Length: 367
Ligand code: ATP
Ligand code: MG
Image (tube, rainbow, N blue to C red):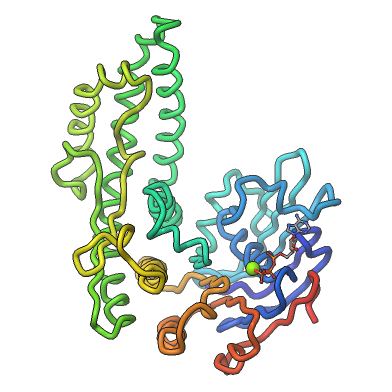
């Protein structure tokens, strides 16, 4: 997959930008606060109309603008696409591909896939399970459209059920709906668990191998999937998981009514990362944390490649500068292949990236 060019209008600190990219490595260089991450964010936005830094589109518009645009010509699975996202303050955005309006943002992730690694990704190892579930969800929504639909439905049902559990004492009639919501959540939840388990199994092999290479064979990284306790084989087809989840929900019914919240289900899942048999969340050093997070992302990138026969676009925000020279060289070797965008402040990094095209950014302009 290749992003050939990009045009921005009133996007963050870019008033107007038009740029052609290299199909290989692109280095976005500049001092702090000039617009490097903003540019990476715009490329990432082309996939799924989603930003890694914000949920809404409002923040993406330049401070004083009431509309903006992101346009690009890109290539995916042998076809060329012209993608356009028009953003408005206080109005719904408009997405089109080759002039045809898109109904959902998911249709955009069907065209372009990206894998991002940024400093905040250290929380993938360090933070609570929510960050790791987000990683699983973002990857799987790109990999499996059925997963994206099940996830959206699960979240919707979860919100409803939470309201029922919160308000049932004041409105006892709500209890009539409870079992129906539990049943539908079990159906969607079974799809989520099945896909997560298979994804984690595939990820384990690759991330483990990458991590071993990274550490010169000195460390071993293992991943495991932690889900609802009654599920015996999470990789089983979702039809087999559904009754197990239903049993689980039935046995927790009373406790949920008392606690007035949804107590357990795939919304509590975790991806457990161990290094040399110990919890990385609790014991990994700074360097180990960075290496483990990067191994997960590079493994994810390889899974996309295996799935599509094509590399997804890789976005590396400010990460190379944090690695020692041996690890940096390892990453650069490992990412040989698809299109890559790397942001950095240091001049010396540019010297190391000889085959790359470099873009100097100053105050939202290309120099
Ligand atoms: P660093 O090296 O520190 O990471 P950077 O070049 O990646 O810097 P960006 O995160 O791209 O910096 O931000 C560049 C500037 O854009 C910041 O000064 C920020 O305040 C500004 N900015 C962010 N959002 C908007 C917006 N909606 N409108 C205008 N400017 C914005
Ligand atoms: Mg930045």
